[in-house]
Length: 418
Image (cartoon, rainbow, N blue to C red):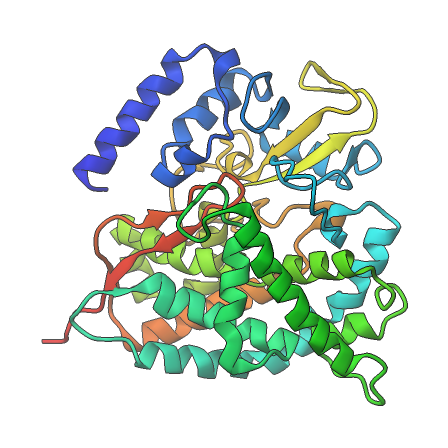
């Protein structure tokens, strides 16, 4: 870690332990942008793991920071509802976007079941050669001996191409998917759009584009096996209202993009910050599947999910009241020393590498998690075939949001062979 980054982190640690515990707000997006969140979560996990924040730009909320407590909330959907939103941010209230991840059973279960065949073991096996071919092409086109933006050239390009396959989306327009995903998850970043109105106008462009694709595929004589065709021809989803259709499309765009995209970048960064693990990987490429799970835990691309209490509930000696906003901090649970051995270390051959909650748990567990793991595995298999090392050059630029641990850019360099 560069000296400047160490100084910033040390200053954050001093602030975290000097601030009265009741005044700590874990949701401040600037800490995610600056990567200074860790000491704040560390202190709250140790001293006040079920943590009430009365004053926050995100509104009053409970922070659930330990692994087992998160599991308690995650698996009790009778008390902790998803139907009032999944982000700590409440949105502007003018443009509600229902989506199945922000629904409770039985409607959630019916809509999720419609799209789940896209990630069946059989379908994943059919898609692996496509992913491998695309990864090979992307990697073979990278420059040697000069810096390039890994986020744009590798992470974004690979995941956007995969989204085209899942939606049967016109390949030449694939960067529209990237743009729409970025706008939806932008947080307080201001360099994407100048106003909420501009953002909403682009989301309406997304709605129009996908409505056109829907109209082409609904009631097809032989329905396709893409996500739009699945929804257009299934009983549980074919009669969705326009905003519900848009909400589910945006969910699938973001879900099919951000986990893999940010883990591809975060994994390269983690290996560069832990060169002993990079050496271990080169010596034994069979560790790639284990490393993929460790990358996902280490990165935790979705930092939190929010629930709303439907009844009073006792947790960790605290009383969560009906109507309270409850935030499960996956990013903290995955660094919980009471559940994971040596959680702050990046270890690619952990004994139990899948013991993490980066994909959530219970009925809302990420439907595409096996696809994300497969894409990461294939990319790293192809990287190791080609490059002894890929170096990170400088500090990455992170997004200003507490919902995702996301990268806007990260320079990398593939050294020329002697």
